[in-house]
Structure formats: C-alpha cells, structure tokens
Length: 164
Image 1 (spheres, one colour):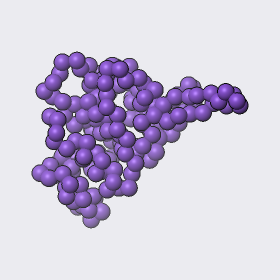
Image 2 (tube, helix red, strand yellow):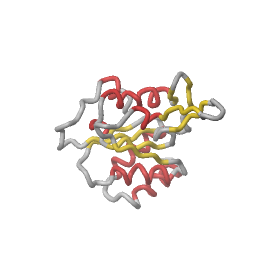
Image 3 (cartoon, helix red, strand yellow):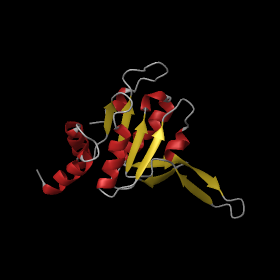
Image 4 (tube, helix red, strand yellow):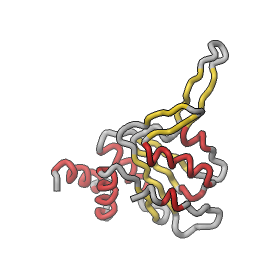
C-alpha cells in the first residue's frame, strides 16, 4: 500500500480502534472521489471517524444533524440582499466544506435529502440560479441508524446511487 495512504489509515486507526476495514473503505471512497453511507448503531464512532478523516488530510469538516424540520437552505445555503446597496450575498450552508457528515440522513424529508444530490454528483450547488463550486475534495459521509426506523424517510434510489 502507498505509504501516504497507510499513514492516513494509521492516523485514523489511532483514534478509532477495531474498525480498520471500515476505515480502509472510507479512505478508498475518498481517493475515488466518492461518498459513503454508514449504517450502524449510535455511539460507535461514526462522527469521530469523519472528523478524524478530515483532520488527517488537513480538510475542513462540516456536520448536519438531519431532522424533520431541516430546510434545504440549511444544507446548501441561501442568498440575502443588502438593504443599503441592493447587492446579493451568498450565505454558505453546511455543505461548503471538504468532508460533510450528514448525520441520520434518513430522518429528514426527501426535499432536504435531494438538496445534497447536486453537491454529491457535480461537486457544486445552485442557489437562486447561481452556481457555487464546492471545495476540493468534497465528500459526504452519511449515517443511518438501522435500529430506529420510526419517523424516517426511505432514501430514494437516485440518492443511494451516489454512495460507493
């Protein structure tokens, strides 16, 4: 294995114990420019894995806790108009980072879930008709809890296809 890749894996493994197989798959997905969906019970280090991966490659980290009341603008951002000048200003959403943890992605509506689709596929987002490039690299690490499914929304096939 490439020494730099081994160094990243070992760095993450020094924080997340006993999950080398998962760590290797996540690092592989990162190298392929892909995204991952991690399905596991709460409290096993999914958030810590995403944070440690970001730190290991000097990337920025963002986190969204997906809830039923989340809005697409919370994910991708929104435009505001300066009252004095009339100029439009883009306010970035949580997606403007290198590594985005989409925590419990199945707990929010399909409308909000779909806000991630363009970002995951095209490495850009569109807000009010303007396109904004995402930082490079951009990777979504989404989580689901396989035990508690009450109050969840099934991920559509179009979204599942975005994950490796």
